[in-house]
Image (cartoon, rainbow, N blue to C red; front, side):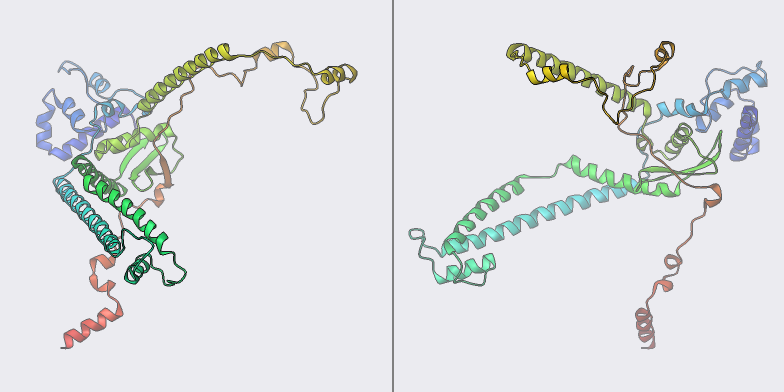
Length: 397
C-alpha cells in the first residue's frame, strides 16, 4: 500500500466514524490534518501549517512522512505518558483492595500477639510451680506441665532441669518477638502500593484478550500481551525480526495505556553506559590502590632453578604432540588484514532488560472470537448428579 492510499483510507475511516455531513464540513477547515493526527495514534504526528494554496501532493507529503518501519510510532511514543490509565471501576476496586490488605494485616498482627502472649502465660504458669531458691526440687505438677509443654511422654528419661533452661531461653525469644511485633506497623504507602500492584496485575491479565493489528514490511501481525509469561505474543505467517516487533509493541502499549510494561532500549543503553563508566572508574581506582600497596610492600626475590637450566641445554627442542600448529606461516599481506579477535574496540554494553516476544502461530491459527464456557452461561451444566437428586427431592416436597 502506497503512502497516498494509506492517507485516503484514513480519510475514509474518519468519514464513517464522524458521519459524512460532519466530515464534509471538516474538509473545508484547514485544521483537518491536525485533527486526524491528534485523534489517530496509528499515523505520524502532523507538523507544520497547511494553506489552501498548497496542492494535494504537497499536503500528503507533509502529513505522511517517509520513515523507516523501525521508527514507526517512535516520536509519539517518546511523548506518551509513562503511566497506566484506570477506569472508575478499577479505582473503586483499588480502594477495596487497600482496605482488605489493611484489615488482613491488622488481624494477622493481633493473632500473632495473642499467640505469643498465650505461650508466655504457659511459661509463667510453669515457673510459678518451681522453687526459685532450690531449682533441683521440682514438684510433680511442674514436671507434668513441662512434659505437656514439650510434648514428651517418658518422665523417667527426662532431664527436667535441662527443660527448665530451655523454657527460659524460649521465654526470652518470645519476649523479643512480642516487642518487635508490637512496634512493627505496615506503612500506609506500602499498603497502597500493594493495592495498586494488585490492580495493575488484574488489568494486565486482560491483555490476553486485547489485540492490535499492524501491517509490517513482512506481512500482517496480530499482537497481544501475556502477563503470566511477561511476553508480547504475536501471530504472523512470516518470521518477524526483532526490529519490526518493537514498533508493534509500541502501538500496543499506547493503544491500551500500559506503557510501563514496554522496555525502552534507548533508556536501557543509557543505563548500561552509566554502569560501564562506573565499573571502569572503580577498576581504575582499585588498580591504582593495588599499585600503591605493591610499591610499599613489594619484596624482590629471584630463585635460580639449576635443573631447569641444565635440562634446557642438554635436551633438544622437540615439539609436543597434539598441538595444532600451522604447516606453513601466513603471508605478511594476509596476516596484516586479519582481524584480531582478542582485541575489542569501543564500549561493550550489556542490556539487563529487553522486551520479550513469542510467536504463537500463523494467522490461520489465530481466532479472534473466544469460546464461551457453557457451564458459566448455563448453571445446570455444572450440576453434579447428587445436586440434581437433591433438587428433585426438594421439588417433590
